[in-house]
Image 1 (cartoon, rainbow, N blue to C red):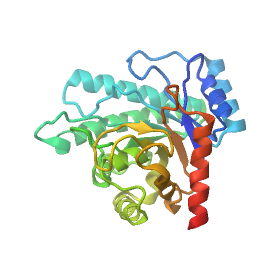
Image 2 (image 1 turned 30 degrees about the vertical axis):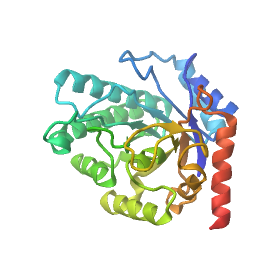
Image 3 (image 1 turned 90 degrees about the vertical axis):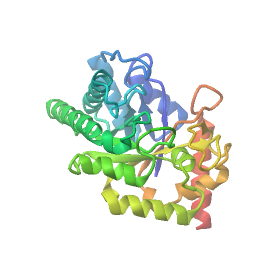
Length: 293
Protein backbone atom coordinates (compact mmCIF):
# COMPACT_ATOMS: atom_id res chain seq x y z
CA UNK A 1 0.00 0.00 0.00
CA UNK A 2 1.15 3.51 -0.73
CA UNK A 3 -0.26 6.76 0.65
CA UNK A 4 -1.50 9.76 -1.29
CA UNK A 5 -3.48 12.88 -0.61
CA UNK A 6 -6.03 15.10 -2.24
CA UNK A 7 -4.33 18.46 -2.87
CA UNK A 8 -5.06 21.70 -4.67
CA UNK A 9 -4.10 22.13 -8.32
CA UNK A 10 -4.28 25.91 -8.22
CA UNK A 11 -1.48 27.68 -10.08
CA UNK A 12 -1.13 24.85 -12.61
CA UNK A 13 -1.90 21.14 -12.63
CA UNK A 14 1.78 20.33 -12.02
CA UNK A 15 1.60 22.16 -8.68
CA UNK A 16 -0.56 19.32 -7.36
CA UNK A 17 2.37 16.92 -7.67
CA UNK A 18 4.69 19.39 -5.97
CA UNK A 19 2.25 19.75 -3.07
CA UNK A 20 1.93 15.98 -2.67
CA UNK A 21 5.72 15.64 -2.61
CA UNK A 22 5.94 18.36 0.04
CA UNK A 23 3.48 16.38 2.22
CA UNK A 24 5.67 13.29 2.01
CA UNK A 25 2.98 11.46 0.05
CA UNK A 26 3.57 8.63 -2.41
CA UNK A 27 0.67 9.61 -4.68
CA UNK A 28 -1.60 12.50 -5.60
CA UNK A 29 -5.31 13.15 -6.09
CA UNK A 30 -6.70 16.47 -7.33
CA UNK A 31 -9.56 18.13 -9.17
CA UNK A 32 -8.78 19.16 -12.73
CA UNK A 33 -11.16 22.13 -12.37
CA UNK A 34 -13.13 23.84 -9.61
CA UNK A 35 -15.26 21.11 -7.99
CA UNK A 36 -18.25 23.43 -7.72
CA UNK A 37 -18.22 24.97 -11.20
CA UNK A 38 -19.08 23.54 -14.61
CA UNK A 39 -16.48 25.60 -16.46
CA UNK A 40 -13.45 23.49 -17.48
CA UNK A 41 -9.86 24.67 -17.14
CA UNK A 42 -7.64 24.91 -20.22
CA UNK A 43 -4.46 23.25 -18.92
CA UNK A 44 -1.27 24.35 -20.64
CA UNK A 45 0.75 21.71 -22.46
CA UNK A 46 3.86 22.61 -20.49
CA UNK A 47 2.01 22.11 -17.18
CA UNK A 48 0.74 18.71 -18.30
CA UNK A 49 4.24 17.69 -19.40
CA UNK A 50 5.69 18.84 -16.08
CA UNK A 51 2.96 16.94 -14.18
CA UNK A 52 3.86 13.71 -15.94
CA UNK A 53 7.58 14.28 -15.42
CA UNK A 54 7.24 14.93 -11.69
CA UNK A 55 4.78 12.11 -11.19
CA UNK A 56 7.04 9.58 -12.93
CA UNK A 57 10.05 10.72 -10.93
CA UNK A 58 8.53 11.01 -7.46
CA UNK A 59 5.17 9.26 -7.10
CA UNK A 60 3.67 5.80 -7.32
CA UNK A 61 0.15 6.85 -8.28
CA UNK A 62 -2.04 9.70 -9.50
CA UNK A 63 -5.82 10.04 -9.77
CA UNK A 64 -8.34 12.80 -10.34
CA UNK A 65 -11.64 13.29 -8.56
CA UNK A 66 -14.49 14.43 -10.78
CA UNK A 67 -16.44 17.53 -9.75
CA UNK A 68 -19.17 17.35 -7.11
CA UNK A 69 -21.85 18.81 -9.38
CA UNK A 70 -22.12 15.65 -11.47
CA UNK A 71 -25.38 13.73 -11.12
CA UNK A 72 -25.68 11.25 -13.96
CA UNK A 73 -28.49 9.51 -12.06
CA UNK A 74 -30.77 12.46 -12.84
CA UNK A 75 -33.67 12.06 -15.25
CA UNK A 76 -33.46 15.77 -16.04
CA UNK A 77 -31.85 15.83 -19.52
CA UNK A 78 -29.99 19.11 -18.91
CA UNK A 79 -28.53 18.00 -15.57
CA UNK A 80 -27.57 14.60 -16.99
CA UNK A 81 -25.91 16.13 -20.05
CA UNK A 82 -23.88 18.58 -17.99
CA UNK A 83 -22.72 15.78 -15.71
CA UNK A 84 -21.90 13.36 -18.52
CA UNK A 85 -19.98 16.07 -20.38
CA UNK A 86 -17.99 17.00 -17.26
CA UNK A 87 -17.20 13.36 -16.53
CA UNK A 88 -16.02 12.75 -20.10
CA UNK A 89 -13.88 15.89 -19.94
CA UNK A 90 -12.25 14.69 -16.70
CA UNK A 91 -11.43 11.36 -18.34
CA UNK A 92 -9.99 13.19 -21.36
CA UNK A 93 -7.67 15.30 -19.21
CA UNK A 94 -6.92 12.25 -17.07
CA UNK A 95 -5.72 10.39 -20.16
CA UNK A 96 -3.62 13.37 -21.21
CA UNK A 97 -2.02 13.44 -17.75
CA UNK A 98 -1.45 9.68 -17.73
CA UNK A 99 -3.56 9.16 -14.60
CA UNK A 100 -4.31 5.77 -13.07
CA UNK A 101 -7.95 6.61 -12.51
CA UNK A 102 -10.78 9.12 -12.35
CA UNK A 103 -12.99 8.78 -9.27
CA UNK A 104 -16.59 9.98 -9.26
CA UNK A 105 -19.88 9.89 -7.36
CA UNK A 106 -22.65 8.57 -9.63
CA UNK A 107 -25.17 10.91 -8.02
CA UNK A 108 -28.64 10.58 -6.53
CA UNK A 109 -32.07 9.55 -7.72
CA UNK A 110 -33.44 12.27 -5.39
CA UNK A 111 -35.95 9.93 -3.79
CA UNK A 112 -37.64 8.87 -7.02
CA UNK A 113 -40.02 5.92 -6.58
CA UNK A 114 -38.08 3.89 -9.13
CA UNK A 115 -34.88 4.24 -7.07
CA UNK A 116 -31.70 2.73 -8.49
CA UNK A 117 -33.62 0.73 -11.11
CA UNK A 118 -34.86 3.94 -12.68
CA UNK A 119 -31.43 5.49 -13.17
CA UNK A 120 -28.96 2.63 -13.65
CA UNK A 121 -29.08 2.88 -17.45
CA UNK A 122 -28.46 6.64 -17.28
CA UNK A 123 -25.39 6.10 -15.12
CA UNK A 124 -24.10 3.32 -17.36
CA UNK A 125 -24.53 5.50 -20.45
CA UNK A 126 -22.48 8.30 -18.86
CA UNK A 127 -19.78 5.84 -17.76
CA UNK A 128 -19.40 4.38 -21.24
CA UNK A 129 -19.29 7.84 -22.80
CA UNK A 130 -16.56 8.92 -20.37
CA UNK A 131 -14.50 5.76 -20.90
CA UNK A 132 -14.76 6.20 -24.66
CA UNK A 133 -13.48 9.79 -24.33
CA UNK A 134 -10.57 8.56 -22.22
CA UNK A 135 -9.70 5.82 -24.69
CA UNK A 136 -9.69 8.23 -27.64
CA UNK A 137 -7.48 10.75 -25.84
CA UNK A 138 -5.11 8.07 -24.57
CA UNK A 139 -4.65 6.80 -28.12
CA UNK A 140 -3.86 10.34 -29.30
CA UNK A 141 -1.54 11.14 -26.38
CA UNK A 142 0.25 7.80 -26.29
CA UNK A 143 -0.81 7.09 -22.72
CA UNK A 144 -2.99 4.48 -21.01
CA UNK A 145 -6.72 4.96 -20.47
CA UNK A 146 -7.48 5.79 -16.83
CA UNK A 147 -9.87 3.53 -14.98
CA UNK A 148 -13.21 5.15 -14.26
CA UNK A 149 -13.81 4.43 -10.58
CA UNK A 150 -17.23 4.39 -8.92
CA UNK A 151 -16.94 5.57 -5.31
CA UNK A 152 -19.10 4.06 -2.60
CA UNK A 153 -21.31 6.55 -0.77
CA UNK A 154 -22.30 7.13 2.85
CA UNK A 155 -25.91 6.27 1.98
CA UNK A 156 -27.43 9.72 2.48
CA UNK A 157 -30.85 10.18 0.85
CA UNK A 158 -31.05 8.78 -2.66
CA UNK A 159 -27.31 8.56 -3.32
CA UNK A 160 -26.21 5.67 -5.51
CA UNK A 161 -23.49 3.17 -4.57
CA UNK A 162 -24.00 2.73 -0.85
CA UNK A 163 -23.05 -0.98 -0.83
CA UNK A 164 -21.34 -3.67 -2.87
CA UNK A 165 -24.57 -4.78 -4.52
CA UNK A 166 -25.34 -1.30 -5.85
CA UNK A 167 -21.82 -0.86 -7.17
CA UNK A 168 -22.06 -4.25 -8.87
CA UNK A 169 -25.38 -3.30 -10.48
CA UNK A 170 -23.72 -0.29 -12.09
CA UNK A 171 -20.75 -2.31 -13.34
CA UNK A 172 -23.01 -4.95 -14.86
CA UNK A 173 -25.11 -2.27 -16.58
CA UNK A 174 -22.03 -1.36 -18.68
CA UNK A 175 -21.70 -5.01 -19.78
CA UNK A 176 -18.86 -5.29 -17.27
CA UNK A 177 -16.60 -2.89 -19.15
CA UNK A 178 -12.96 -3.58 -18.34
CA UNK A 179 -12.10 0.06 -17.60
CA UNK A 180 -14.76 0.47 -14.91
CA UNK A 181 -13.66 -0.10 -11.34
CA UNK A 182 -14.38 1.00 -7.77
CA UNK A 183 -12.82 3.17 -5.08
CA UNK A 184 -13.75 2.31 -1.49
CA UNK A 185 -13.91 5.14 1.06
CA UNK A 186 -13.36 4.04 4.65
CA UNK A 187 -15.51 6.84 6.10
CA UNK A 188 -18.35 6.17 3.63
CA UNK A 189 -18.33 2.44 4.38
CA UNK A 190 -18.41 3.18 8.12
CA UNK A 191 -21.27 5.66 7.68
CA UNK A 192 -23.24 3.17 5.57
CA UNK A 193 -22.95 0.54 8.31
CA UNK A 194 -19.78 -1.43 7.48
CA UNK A 195 -17.61 -1.60 10.60
CA UNK A 196 -14.16 -1.05 9.12
CA UNK A 197 -12.58 -1.76 12.52
CA UNK A 198 -13.86 -5.36 12.41
CA UNK A 199 -11.89 -7.82 10.27
CA UNK A 200 -14.85 -10.18 9.88
CA UNK A 201 -17.14 -7.35 8.72
CA UNK A 202 -14.52 -6.29 6.19
CA UNK A 203 -14.08 -9.87 4.99
CA UNK A 204 -17.83 -10.22 4.42
CA UNK A 205 -18.25 -6.97 2.49
CA UNK A 206 -15.15 -7.51 0.38
CA UNK A 207 -16.26 -11.07 -0.42
CA UNK A 208 -19.60 -9.72 -1.65
CA UNK A 209 -17.79 -7.14 -3.79
CA UNK A 210 -15.29 -9.64 -5.19
CA UNK A 211 -17.96 -12.24 -5.96
CA UNK A 212 -20.10 -9.62 -7.72
CA UNK A 213 -17.54 -7.83 -9.88
CA UNK A 214 -14.15 -9.51 -9.41
CA UNK A 215 -11.19 -8.48 -7.21
CA UNK A 216 -9.39 -6.71 -10.07
CA UNK A 217 -11.93 -3.88 -10.11
CA UNK A 218 -10.91 -2.54 -6.69
CA UNK A 219 -8.34 0.04 -7.82
CA UNK A 220 -8.05 2.68 -5.06
CA UNK A 221 -8.98 3.61 -1.50
CA UNK A 222 -10.08 6.85 0.09
CA UNK A 223 -8.68 6.87 3.61
CA UNK A 224 -10.66 9.01 6.04
CA UNK A 225 -11.70 8.88 9.68
CA UNK A 226 -15.30 9.83 10.52
CA UNK A 227 -16.88 12.54 12.63
CA UNK A 228 -20.17 10.58 12.74
CA UNK A 229 -21.09 7.18 14.22
CA UNK A 230 -21.26 3.80 12.51
CA UNK A 231 -24.36 3.61 10.32
CA UNK A 232 -25.08 7.35 10.52
CA UNK A 233 -25.38 7.71 6.70
CA UNK A 234 -23.59 11.04 7.08
CA UNK A 235 -20.41 11.86 5.17
CA UNK A 236 -18.21 13.83 7.58
CA UNK A 237 -14.47 13.19 7.23
CA UNK A 238 -12.08 13.52 10.15
CA UNK A 239 -8.30 13.37 10.50
CA UNK A 240 -6.67 9.95 10.75
CA UNK A 241 -7.00 8.60 14.30
CA UNK A 242 -8.94 11.64 15.53
CA UNK A 243 -12.48 10.58 14.63
CA UNK A 244 -14.90 7.89 15.79
CA UNK A 245 -13.16 5.16 13.78
CA UNK A 246 -9.93 6.07 15.55
CA UNK A 247 -7.09 3.60 15.85
CA UNK A 248 -9.48 0.91 14.58
CA UNK A 249 -8.76 2.27 11.12
CA UNK A 250 -5.59 0.20 11.31
CA UNK A 251 -7.70 -2.94 10.77
CA UNK A 252 -8.92 -1.48 7.48
CA UNK A 253 -5.41 -0.47 6.44
CA UNK A 254 -3.90 -3.86 7.22
CA UNK A 255 -6.45 -5.89 5.26
CA UNK A 256 -4.58 -7.97 2.66
CA UNK A 257 -7.08 -7.08 -0.10
CA UNK A 258 -5.75 -3.52 -0.05
CA UNK A 259 -2.12 -4.48 -0.47
CA UNK A 260 -0.56 -2.64 -3.41
CA UNK A 261 -3.34 -0.07 -3.70
CA UNK A 262 -3.09 3.69 -3.29
CA UNK A 263 -4.80 5.04 -0.15
CA UNK A 264 -5.71 8.69 -0.74
CA UNK A 265 -6.39 10.93 2.26
CA UNK A 266 -9.20 13.50 2.05
CA UNK A 267 -8.94 14.79 5.60
CA UNK A 268 -9.58 18.33 6.89
CA UNK A 269 -6.25 18.87 8.66
CA UNK A 270 -6.65 22.20 10.43
CA UNK A 271 -8.89 23.50 7.65
CA UNK A 272 -6.44 23.42 4.75
CA UNK A 273 -6.46 19.68 4.04
CA UNK A 274 -3.89 16.97 4.60
CA UNK A 275 -0.77 17.75 6.64
CA UNK A 276 2.50 15.77 6.68
CA UNK A 277 1.56 14.42 10.11
CA UNK A 278 -1.66 12.95 8.65
CA UNK A 279 0.34 10.92 6.13
CA UNK A 280 2.65 9.80 8.95
CA UNK A 281 -0.32 8.83 11.14
CA UNK A 282 -1.76 6.66 8.36
CA UNK A 283 1.54 4.88 7.78
CA UNK A 284 2.01 4.33 11.52
CA UNK A 285 -1.49 2.90 11.99
CA UNK A 286 -0.92 0.40 9.22
CA UNK A 287 2.51 -0.63 10.49
CA UNK A 288 1.18 -1.20 14.02
CA UNK A 289 -1.79 -3.20 12.76
CA UNK A 290 0.46 -5.38 10.56
CA UNK A 291 2.79 -5.97 13.51
CA UNK A 292 -0.15 -7.22 15.61
CA UNK A 293 -1.43 -9.53 12.89
